[in-house]
Length: 342
Image (tube, helix red, strand yellow):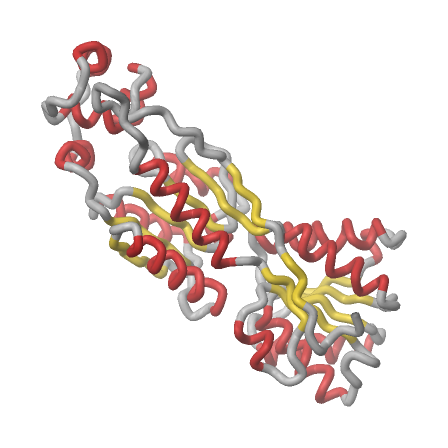
C-alpha cells in the first residue's frame, strides 16, 4: 500500500494524506480520522516520498525524453523547462534512449529525487506491449505523470497530444484537391504518434474515394540520406507525384530526392512535411508543413501540472478536488510554403 491507495480508500487527496502522516496542523479532525483509520487497518509505513510531501513541494519536475538531439524533442524540452521555470519549478532531464530497461531506470531515478511530477516527452513511451507500461502505471500512484504526445489509460496519468491523425488526413485531402493522384507517405519511426499519422493518411484516402489499402506507405531510416535513397528506389518502381512525410527531417530527405532526381517542385512533385520546425523554412524551397503546435501542447502540459500540484484550498486548508481531463487534443494547422501548389 502507498499514499495513493490510502487517499483512495479514505476518500481524500494525496496531499491530505501526506499532511496527516507528517503531523501537520492544517488538517481537519474528520480528514485525519479517515486517513488514520485506513493506516491502522493496513499497517502502512510512510516512505521517503510521503515524508517529503509533508515538508512541502520539492518544486522539481522530472522530464524524460528518448533523444534530445531530435529537433522536435529538443524544442519540447526547451518549451517545457521555460514554462516550468516561469511557474517557480526546476526540472531534471533524463535522456533515456529507446531501451525499455533504460526508461525504467530513468523513471526510478526521478522518483528517488522526489520530483513532484514526471513528464514523458514524445510518443516513444507508449510501448507495443501494454505490460511494458507497468512501471509508469505504478509510478503514477505516487507521482502525477503527464504524457506529451502519448496516451496510457491509467490513474493519475494524463495526456496532451497534437491531432496527428487529423493533420495527415487534411494533408492528404489537400494534395488530392490540388490534383495529386499518386501520393506516397514516408516515415522513419514506429510510435504512438506514428500510428496516428498512418491512420490519418488512410482516412484521408478513403474520403477521397481511394481504397485505404492501396495507399503507398513506406518506412526508411531516420536520416536525410536514408529517406532520399528510399524514395529514389520507390520512384524507380513506380513514379509518384506527391510526398507526405512524418516529420520535417524526413521532409528534407524527400526534398533532396526531388532535387537530385531533377523533378520540378511543386510542378512535378509536391511535398508536405510534419511538425513545422525551423527545418521547414531553413531549406530551399521552403517546405509546406503540418504545424503540430508543439509550444501550445507544452504550455498545456505545464498548466495541467500546476493545476494538479497547486489546487485551491477550502476553508480548513484542505485541497479542493480539481477536474483534470485525461486526454487533451491540440488541433494541427497546415502551413503552406513553396513545395505545394495550393
